[in-house]
Length: 355
Image 1 (cartoon, rainbow, N blue to C red):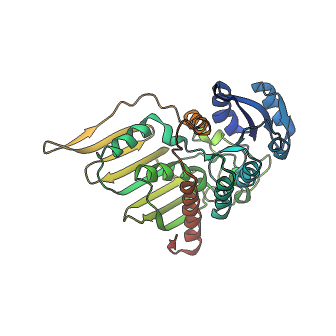
Image 2 (cartoon, helix red, strand yellow):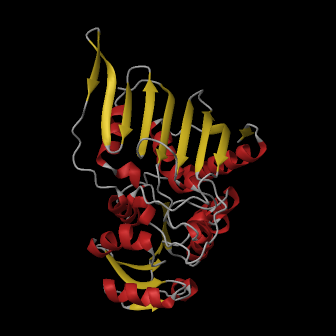
């Protein structure tokens, strides 16, 4: 009989409510037995809403509980590594919201703790589990793209600053702005499609132009995160652009923004291959190649876009239960945080940064 896994959630905010609560509740092999938030009233409210029997204000109280199998981390970015390392050292499996950590040193601490514990550590990479993404990966693995030598990816919003003045826009807590918030999603997806080449250098630039602008909600994502009751802090970028080189000669252009004077919001991954290319933009997929001496455009029908959050959590359960190998490995997460950190460093110094 498959073991029922008992889960404690750390963080009762928006990402738990929006992306974690339903998948955790609906999986027959999971039982959420505790929820933690530094604001105990928030934890208690979430516990009552979702039928969770225990609420706490200190994550250490649940990490030491022997019956807990899994710690699910849904906190601000700064605390991801601290909680993950403590949970792994206590013998718990860990699922963590993205980004992995706020800097490479903290990501490496998580990697070492996972290796020492023998437990599963996985960080949210939900975009890998979207129907179009799975189709693209299988299509690429079938040799249809050829050599992936160049690409572009990004997520640009006209107006969509999350939690302005709150932890999202406070560098100490978030680690950065849209680059670390949104970049994890689509840089990861592009590199995964490219076959996970190793990054060797980056060049980047960041801009903060909307910190003092009126808080116009031009995106549903601007509703995400808790805004400051006063003016709050805004010491992160609202636009990041960059260029990544890989050890196989491939390259990737990136652009991520919370606010820009553009026509409309877009998230996308585009790769150029020697046999064909594709563009995955705002959930729509197009493949561009040639057949019988004629250039062709293909529009695959891959099914309804689910967002992939639940599928990612369920994949983690399958890994914990020993049914499958992980689609995401921690070294890929360390490389991601190294890329993001180096782009910030390049923006600060105005120079290319070697990895």
